Length: 275
Image (cartoon, rainbow, N blue to C red; front, side, top):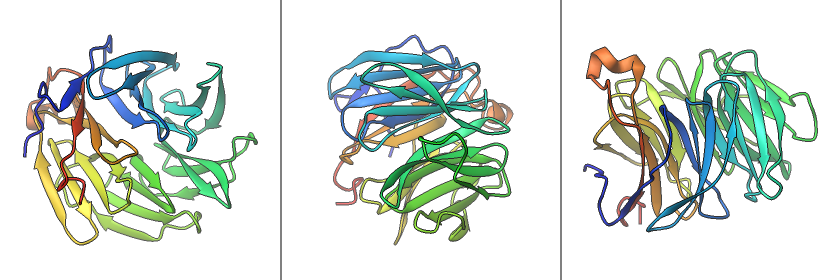
């Protein structure tokens, strides 16, 4: 099935984004949608079923590669090529540095460890780190062998995609160890991961323009028009946001040069929701 823009069940966000979108994330407590992009910006909109209103934006000292929300929706954290993780207080608008790696931070997520919200950061330095935001140093780290290309977390599950098309699962109850590793069902490099709100499946996006909805029992691969650079579920499971844009690593292979940068919010039907 092809997801087309401009339909009655989709909102195409008009914005001044000037480069490829690296990540989209819905707030778990509201209709806020955050988008990190290679123009050094992280922008936030209030999105409903008919329109999207800009809320705020922050700037990195290099391409913004990822973003996530705290579980209560009060904070948005982003990571970038500047090797820093930055946190924004949505009430006050203030921001601060909360994480640091040796190389760019490609992914950020929150998990609950022992009842406390912990920030997880995945980097091109081939590690993931755990951060208590009340401390300056990480609580620990895990060697993932290859660059982190995509990551998501929900409940006790952390899913990581690395440069060699491997997918790693970590149990947040035992965060220092990789619980399971398998090869991606897609033929090309993984660009994005998103665990569904009910944790029944993981949406895997790759550079050839294909998503695999990886269920525990089966998988469903679907084509879209363009190269997906990132994907995110709304907390209610009814909407899937994805970004299309230029992917420089695949220009010669699949001819995506000049692909327009855009965000599409797709309303999922009952079958796509796994109902």
